[in-house]
Image (cartoon, rainbow, N blue to C red; front, side, top):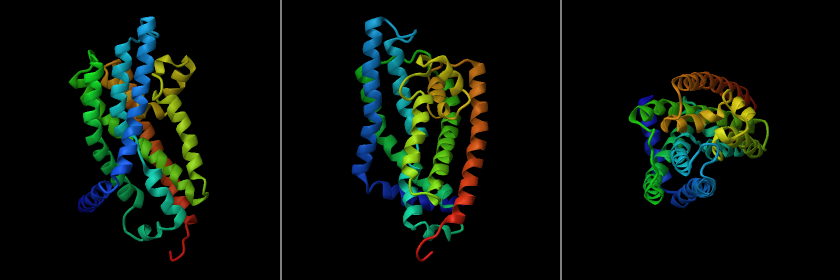
Length: 265
């Protein structure tokens, strides 16, 4: 299995370098949003002194940490796999003795992340030089504690998105469903607004949903904003949702593949 993943890594890594324009567009997308959020919220915080206790520096550190977290936990499975179900090219992969999503699609996602991270890091340094944020509460302990949450957060996101992609076995409108899925992700993950600025009902609900595990929980952990109880609760929800996400994905794949048919399959 190691040799399989090694070979897939080599193929997908080489493939990513062939789409440099696509890489540029993705990186631009990831950069523009946090820069806009930083500009807006720091202006408000500077004008008012703070926003519900959050200073301008708090917003800068939050969105700069979020930029890295979002890069690590995001996925692109809908972009590189859904079309295979719809146009029938999946037929060439399902005859192999490996799972097409948990091997090739997964490796493709990781290769994409590795390449975009190489581009994002110097941009992150430029933002740091521009805004000179103070990460006063961040420590190496926080960073080390966040690593498992980032990995688990990615796999939860990947599995849930893969389950949505598997809906393409039944319908052609998987893109619309994926966009719909993006609404609760944006609302409950803290991507646009730190959850502590959201209404309390949103904060309470988000604790039990997987979306804040993608972004908000790892970000706050890196910034040293969580208590020991909150960290333990976050890790517990990580394990619970990883199991739930795997069960959902396994069910949609097992039942969806039965519906698959393609010319020449």
